[in-house]
Amino acid sequence: MSAAEQPMAGKPLNLGDFRTMRANGEAIACLTAYDAAFAAAQESAGIDLILVGDSLGMVIQGHRSTVPVRVDDILYHTRCVTRAVTRPWVVADMPFLSVRSPDYAVEQAGRLMQEGDAAMVKLEGGESQVDVARALADQGIPVCGHLGLQPQLFYKLGGFKVQGREAAAAQAIVDRARALEQAGADMILLECVPNAVTQAVVEATSVPVIGIGAGPHAHGQILVMHDMLNVTKGRKPRFVKDFMSEAGGVEAAFAAYVREVKSGAYPQPTHGFG
Image 1 (cartoon, rainbow, N blue to C red):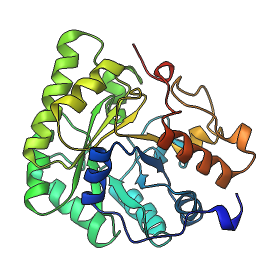
Image 2: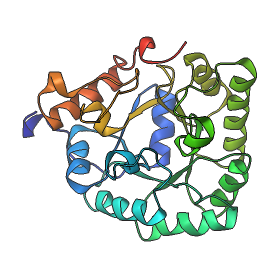
Image 3: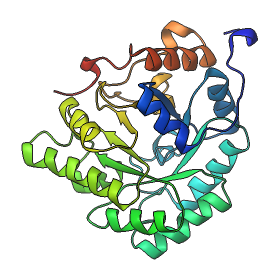
Image 4: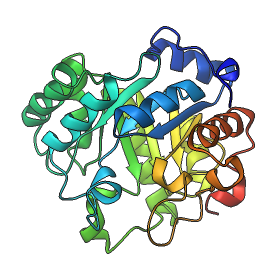
């Protein structure tokens, strides 16, 4: 993509912008990034939201799961990203055990915002997830709840598996999404859930819902950058599309991804789960 075709960096996006995008039916284009160069390229391509994900444990550090990632790791990479971009909303992951209590979560999230300049934190978690979200929101910290497949539960789940296939499990995801919103969460991320579960969460909540392997009903889509560039080792999930092979370059691949997310061309129902 030529310089003339690249979107100009605009004013920083905020939560109000994402609510407006949801209301207007404009899809939110999101990717992970972990350093300045790729973050800047994503901004040039028009990415709306960048997640500094604990997926860095696998694609950057070479671990088999996200469990070994520490807050200091996320903080370092968040600093790298936020220095490089202006317009995208930057979300920092709360890694394994960083949300073990509401007070501890507030302390760690505060570091990611004060020292890393993150605009929002994303959290996984069990029964305490709602209490943690409430504590963070009470301190003015924007929160994205993460439901469905939670990679930090890799060992407990026995691997990366689709969640919410059974009726009771699906309803539990919908109920948790509603509870997170009521606790003050500003966004929900759904990972590897059936398309119908995503649709139910969208209908049950009023915040933007971002999907990864969750079908076309979400208000936005996110992929791990390395997956969509086809540079990840091993078998990629079925919901991932290789944007690099047709684009022929990194920035062109990012731009193609943004276009397809915005137009609804990606994901198709076949990129999700029935």
